[in-house]
Figure 1 (cartoon, rainbow, N blue to C red):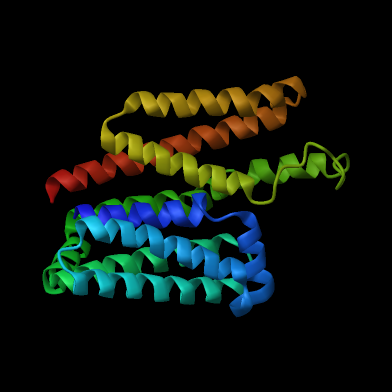
Figure 2 (figure 1 turned 180 degrees about the horizontal axis):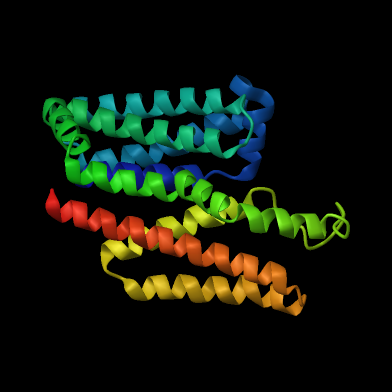
Length: 253
């Protein structure tokens, strides 16, 4: 297990701390002919080699791990070089790298059957499924419920602001920012609740109050302030209700 953790640490060091931006730009511009790509793979292989030198049980073990990690890293980075720099591709890239490292480690150690059984048992565990369900409910379903509850207020608010708000208005927020703020705050609320860290929930409420409602009250827009306050309280109420319901089901299961 120490070797697996070290290999993952090595991956992140090589990918984020020892890869200059010039190498990344070179890879995107030149693809397979990129010197930056080959330099990055060399650095990665050297670090992996140093780890395997001290922790690999045999030369054949080290050779398989080195070749597997080096070739897969080259292939994945070459594939990503033709893709836009967006969040989905970034996450896919990192998941693939980690999946290869874990898969090689499992295969070389001959414990793939045990790992597969463990994964199946974990995924099908009712306690795990109920926690996953809680986070799923806390995101889009909760967001839709809040929008339905606030529908009348939303129509009244934005019809009143339609005549005064222009595309250049500095008070216009980022697109979909409110929805993502809601997702994050409800997921954090659930996490703190499951961990028994109720002070963390209080910190979230206080932080949002300071950063969001301070500007609203300065603008003397009481209608918008009350609308945002209702939305925030609904968001936390729904998150707490989901969390308490999940904990009750967890104990019942």
